[in-house]
Image (cartoon, rainbow, N blue to C red; front, side, top):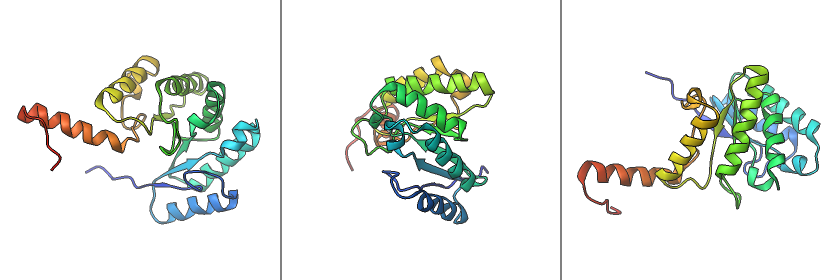
Length: 197
């Protein structure tokens, strides 16, 4: 039987604005309690003010605090003002050791959009071409229908390739998607529309 990973958010979710020491202690506590994956939220103010080295240093410290746990860096890309910032933040997170880059917390007004996904996927390709390190992509927030999910699968296949179409490198953070998938499967199996109960 496969091991079930325990994921935990940390670092002042969803804002990422608490002091660095506090964010690092949250990570250490979650790992000590058994988390094998840590979702961190980057400090968006560092992106918006162009403090790239500080952002890199913070994420690197967070990665070190994770120990053996995987680090997923949430960019909150919809709040980074432009796609150039999304690309740079993606590269910084990967250079600092992120195992996954994630579009959003799901709390922003703009979450996972295909244009944001394309930019993040291009950053992953560029990083891979320079390092041979594969980093995962996790779109989160705003993915509500199976059609939305298919759009993301196609985008990932076209830009990143089949190697990324596994849970090891591509996942959805889309709790709203589950209901639509259940509805569609029910209709396929029974031939009837599902009812709320």
